[in-house]
Image (cartoon, rainbow, N blue to C red; front, side, top):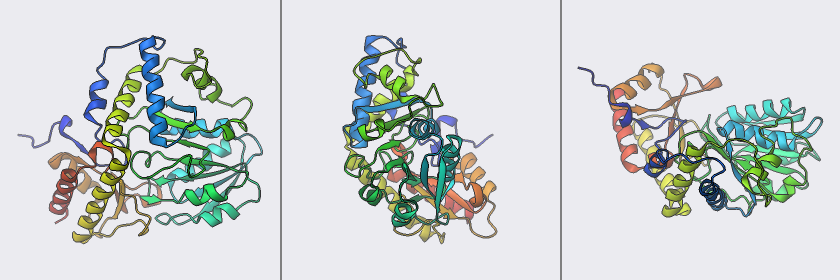
Length: 363
């Protein structure tokens, strides 16, 4: 008789989707509406309002892009960056590398500021990298390494540059203050600390960035001018594309659950669970990979001990205990595990379960 746990009983503690809030799951089953139905338009408006609250911004142009977090990255770059524009990019992990790739495809003159994977970026080095960049881009929470990069200092010292922030793994999980920190554009994903299935990319853009946008972005689908008209951020609505109705329902509900708890309370819950996870892993004799003082509570990287089979451990955790954790990517493949503690998954019982199961599996 198989001991495999049912798929519905999985505890998702990898770097990808977390277990979504029950309210977000239930909302996926709502009766379908048309994308022009007034009831759906009202829900879309409320979703944008809730996103402003979570982003801590008053930006009118705050919308859920129809696509995953990578669509948010593409939208941010193609609307702001054109041929010859200088873009300073902080690179200390996979998603900083991806920013460089996307900016290069836009024709930008990319100036990299590198730090070793596992270490945080130096804000002063980013600010000094070029005298007059159009954009300074940084990943707030680097999913590939579990490192938090400082954003507030960049906003204070950016000068005429636009500050572009990847908040895919930070929004809803750790403090992020778009307006107070001087962030001009930021994007996220629904599947991590927001506790919703993957499929939408919340994005916010301020007036300063809007005034310096590319006249005709290379992507028709991700043109924020047309998306904004569809979402009503410019005061008038025009048809642009068919929105993923059920995903908007789900995001609306997930944001409702998050805000009912309280954003600061959610930050504290993630911090508490992350701290308990870090301490528990160290009690097991495991080494944490990310730089101390810049470790994310919602995404933990742990060094795989010598002689331990990476794939076998992850497979056993999944098949025997129904727990998913992730492996390393890029140069960290086979060297670290990535353990997510995000959204609805960030609960003490899940931390306790993971530590007990991992201790059993690795002996």
